[in-house]
Structure formats: structure tokens, C-alpha cells
Length: 495
Image: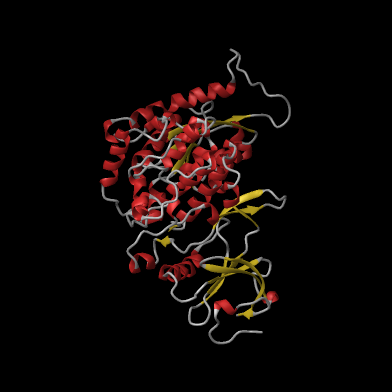
């Protein structure tokens, strides 16, 4: 039957039709909402006919937490603005005057919550899962949304055609904040909102617009997946929540001896009490999880136990500083902290072109204090046949390119280590990568996509035997890349 007038959520049953959606089967009954597998009655007329659909209906029983009602309104407001593979596709919603609901894509897969039962997980799996979550968060933040309730049950792993785990998908946007939409939760309530084990220090202090809050929550998940324990327990009081402002979590390597130093460095950086001491974007976190050999090890990597009394005092004083509203919210933070890729033809470019590319990269890093630079050299290999991997003097070509790349970047790192850049870790802002490829242009484009690169800097040769016949590498990168590309030429007369 088709419903008319107001509908009580508790009276829903399989077979009912709500605004053209038939309730096929109850999928889940939670404390805040009920989930139904649904299908369209008039599927032939719908562009969503190929989607498996899910209807989410809030549980309204009277006397419920008013934040749950407002949170559902927030989710109805935010979900239609979201796109991409890391969120369920929005289809429709109903209003509170009749029956509140959201119809969305049903994600075939399982939640990250299931993996906690097997924790601690192998290090490679922790890094892989963390990179997928961080990639999904970066996509969300670029859409100007802070999730603010990142936890294992709100992360689904989309199932690939072969049954393996695919992209991470974020769900449940009831506590989220959109830079350009009213923050109903902030307007109507004055209390910390979130799930206690995963809340960031700034959420405890009622700051809701910082995307780095989601990175703190991701750090909690990484800690739990690595050690089998939560870094701050599961507090049930405001006093318990505030302990994360000054109590350092027990170092992961104290709880798990085979936790590598680089992973401890990454996790504890995510769990810093001040947002500016964490990763500045989710893309930067994903980058380190995918390139552990490039993680710069600092004091965090060698930390043991749960910190000293002096460390507690230091963390307490740091926490006393007022939490600041982030300028521009999620979108502004992402724009200020790009990952720049310098694709450098170390072997083939003339010195003037190498210098011009270095100057351009330096200006980009100086303009954006949170920016990072990935220096990339592509070692061309043959499509067929054996490649000579050693130079005439016996030096591996890969190692020679890596040394040359570091030499090229040394003046840039020195410029970032001046007093004007005090407080910033120059070493951690620059990484070095050598990859082998038959086609350098394709390799650069794929590398940029895989690592969420925001800006590519590369040189263009004025002549060359490949350019006449195949077109330049830089021209293909400009044409096919998803991000901004700056092509640098050597000054006229230089060489």
C-alpha cells in the first residue's frame, strides 16, 4: 500500500510503499535510526534503477535526545551536496511533517568495525586501511565538509567485483559541518558532540570547523588497529573527555613490540593535542601511510611508556591555549596545505631548467606553510628486453637518481630551514621518490592521482628527439592530469 498523511516510523513494515520506494527488508535497527533495504516501484523511470538502495528512518519515540533530531536534519541537508566514490550516493529524502527519511545508495561491503575484533592487525594492513580512510576524508574535506564522527562503524569498505575490499566510504553525517551551510548543532546546543573514544581535543572544547579533528579520530582508529586498545579509553564524563588534553597515550611500541617506529611516528602525530602539530590534511596522512620509507622519525618514534610527568605538564600548558576557528573551514585548510609534486628530469634537463623548477617549488612551499613537496624522478626502462640497472662505474641507476634528486633539493631545504620558517620541520616537508616506467608521462599522471597531488611542477625542454615525434612529456601531463600543472622553462639564453 502507498502511505498518505503522517506516518509513524515505528509502524513501518516490509511491503509498504513510501513515496514510490517499497520496503523490502529490515536491514538494521539501531538506537538512533532504522535501516531498510528498498527498491523503486517505478524503477524504469528512475536513473537510480541500477543502484541498490537503503532508506534511513530516524527513531522518534518521544523524549529522545533532541540532538538526534537536529542531527538527522543536518544529514538531510549535507548529503545532497556530496559526490564521489567515498560517500553513498544521495537519492531522496522525506520531511518531518510526514515521514523523515533519506534514501541513498546501499554500499555492498562491510564496516571497519569488524576489523577491530581481529586487532592488533598486521602493520601492512593497518597502513592500507588507514590510507583508504585518509583518502576518503581528503575527498570529503575538499567538498568543504568536516565529518566529526569518524569511527570504525562509520567507515564502510566497498566490495570490489572480485570480493576484495575497495574504497573506504564514509557514512552518517549527523554531526558533520559544511563550510557553506548553517551549523544547526552549533546554533542550538552548547555541548561537546561526538563519540567519546574518538573525539578530538578541539571537539571537547566545542570547536567544530577544523578538518584536522577528523585526523585525530583517524589516529585513534590506527592506534586501536595497531595495539588492540584505545589510546584514551571510552570516557563517559566531561572530566574523562578532557584528559586527552593533557594525558599522553601510551606509546604503541610499548604495547606492541613489532610496531615499527615510522608507524608510531604517524599515529602519535595524528594524536597531538594541538591541530597545527598534526598532519595538516588527510592527503598528507595518506601519503605517509603509503610511503613509510619517507616518514621522518622524530621524538615521537622513540617515545616509550605513557610519557613523563614533565610531558604531561607540557601537554597541559599547550592545551591552555584557546582553540582557534580555522579560517575557511575544511576547504580553506585543504587549500593552504597542498601536496606539490616536482617531477624532475635529473639526467636530461639543463642546469638552468633544474634551477627554474627548484625556484618555482620553493615559492610554492613558502606561500603555503602547510605544503609538502614530493620530489620525483622517473627512470625510463625498455618495454621489451633487459635494462642495464648499473652505470659504468657499478653504481645502481636507481640510487644515482635518488642521490641526484636529493642534491637538487638541498638548496630548497636550506631555504626552508631559515629562522623565517622556525617551528616547521623542513626535513618532513620534502620527500624523494624514484620510480621505473616505460612511459614517464603516464607514470607521473598515475603517481599524482594515487597520492592526491594538488599541484605538479615540471620542466619543459626546448628541444629533444622524443618531443618532435611523440609530443613532450609536459604537454601530456598538462592535458591528462586532474590537478594544477605548472610547466617551467629555462630563462631565454640560459643553458
